[in-house]
Length: 433
Ligand SMILES: NC(=O)C1=CN([C@@H]2O[C@H](COP(=O)(O)OP(=O)(O)OC[C@H]3O[C@@H](n4cnc5c(N)ncnc54)[C@H](O)[C@@H]3O)[C@@H](O)[C@H]2O)C=CC1
Ligand SMILES: N[C@@H](CC=O)C(=O)O
Ligand code: NA
Image 1 (tube, helix red, strand yellow):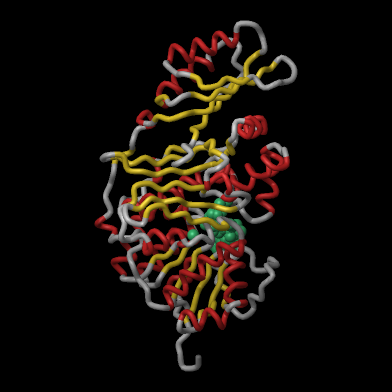
Image 2: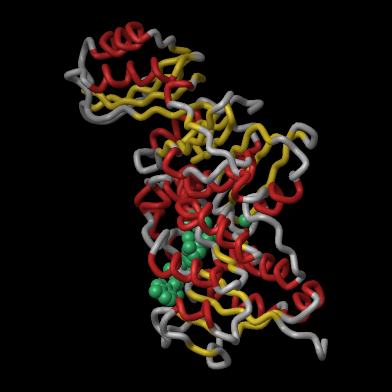
């Protein structure tokens, strides 16, 4: 491909994803050049520690101590940000690159969830692409799928498993009978977890991604603060076993849908019927389901975290840029994105799983059932799994009720003298949802 100008890439961040991008560009260089119409080469890199062993030869690239300088270097045509963090150097680099009219690629969902609208506006003003396929569901081409493949459809709902770390933890608990804390370190070692893993396990990472998906799907401004979030920290092995006995798996799901003139955005551990597509999503896999008014149901699945899959998505964006593609970041021009009010938590209804720990003594079950009756929550089944010592676990599945009623019953149950901590509740996904 002599005579063709290569696309010169500056990479900030050489951790799991950054090193993966260098390896992939090396390994598939010829194929990528044929598909992109020109070679894609790394010209300059920046990271915190120059000497760290990363399994790649960095001697060929210019080393830049201050990553934000990549934005203005003549040997950089496109900037790839793989540092992380909603603000700080990542945001400075993003703004600097777009203001310098350089295409910008990022895997940073935290930054996009907080500043996506601003960055989209800057990209449009500069008429350069802002690309972030890696930011949602790692290697799965779901951004492209919604932004381009489903662009002709009105989308009514997006549901998904959006965090590989949580899915990996829940699956290993389920298959190996391990407790939550036993598995987290493995997820970190395998490169799935965020630098601060509480972003994963507390559902914040999934919420970042959900707010990006909602914007793409519904033509709304990314609204991360409006996402209602609960993570998996309180899920015990006993919940997973009980759910399995009742025909469910526990998955951390994200749901976004437009209800009238308001937007539901929610991340919550959920009971998924074993026959449902999302129940088969295991380990670090992610999945996204979207409903279009002409295409029907779309189901995307694949690896949502880790070096190879995430690098694959970053390089796909670079190939688009090398080809000259430059569509709007969030499927329509930033100024056309609407602001929808958040649907209140009390607008919801469905079936729920409730688990509480109580002192094992006479009269407690009667108090629990009274709390449910007074709140108007009707119970489909109540189970008291065998438990040790003087602590009893009580597990209930409700009939279809309002979440407001469930929350009311839970508040009463928590205040009972025999209560041993905050009850856990999880929505149950409908089999055909
Ligand atoms: N690991 C994964 O599976 C996925 C990660 N992401 C996102 O990709 C980004 C990078 O993630 P990882 O590679 O996992 O993180 P990491 O922690 O492995 O790597 C971060 C890199 O940034 C460098 N860095 C930190 N501060 C810097 C600064 N001021 N200037 C220059 N370099 C700096 C570090 O030295 C390191 O090389 C994050 O935004 C993350 O949310 C997205 C999808 C999947
Ligand atoms: N920490 C994230 C990485 C990918 O986005 C996850 O576990 O999904
Ligand atoms: Na993706």
